[in-house]
Length: 400
Image (cartoon, rainbow, N blue to C red; front, side, top):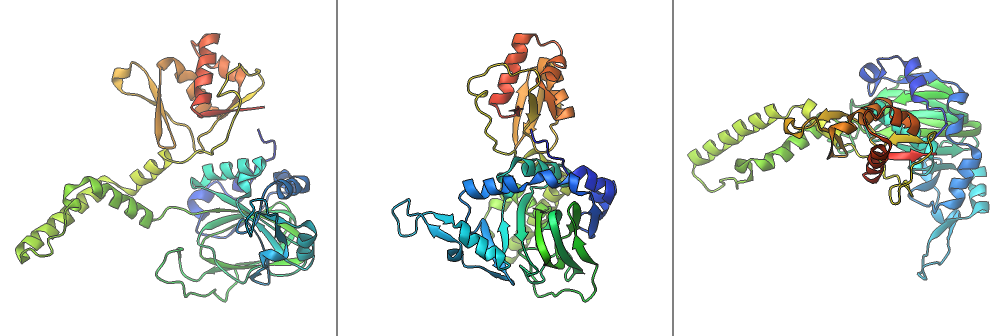
């Protein structure tokens, strides 16, 4: 279990309790959370370990300088391990140092998949924004500008870990632009929403479509960008289209060669059916369905799910559902049974397991001793069997 302080709670305290409803995706927000709230997310020792023990090359790890990508061959080589002409690409430490000294920015994508404290922070933010989050690392020395003034097609939360970085944030050129859009020819407004240096512990939220430029201040800068794409009306409309496959009328061929009256009647019936389906599948239904299908991280938790032994009382048990775990009553005929839905799969449990499931849903992380005490009528043997079942189904993981 990560002991690194998570920044999300403090950020919401500073940004306002209504951040998600009032500012998320709408306004630029800056908060000074303090270096102590973010410093343990990534230490130099941890970063060196990641760069040394993982095969990190383009496109996951890239270098940029003055808006252009540094050729990969300048800081990697092929180790020839697969007897091919290329082989696996590995970082060359001395070449990497040289490029960084010359002002290149190091970008490491998806660092949340490589370092547990950042994983925990990303999961925490997911529960706030209710979207999948990817975290990228940016590291630079000097005053070079890694990227030209640009906008992102997703919302971001930037956490300054060490050093400082100069930001110039403009407003949107086109409201709510998308990666796949009809207009990408907009430019940045002349006005500046905010300009200044981010210090360790500073956190900003930059909505999608907001133009910004980032430059080094002459010293080292290391920050994390938490990026997430929020659902739009277009996503809902695509989901509605998926529901139309259950309608026989929409699976029929269009009567291209029929008479005018036949074509008109078919078109009218299509419109009536479409309105019926839209009315029955509102945006709130789409979001609820998506929450039930929200993925869990594929975290391996050996050895207990394979050969179970009762863990010590002080060990932690954490639910794997990234969003809240909802315990619901099963069908009335199931005599008090309960169900939980995780990643689109529904699990049904006997009523006797309801107390421990509700405790996990309420507290998310509990010790084995606390879970046992809250397990209601389960005796030690049945509690052990219930815990083993939850571990085997990857509904919970065991923490040291």
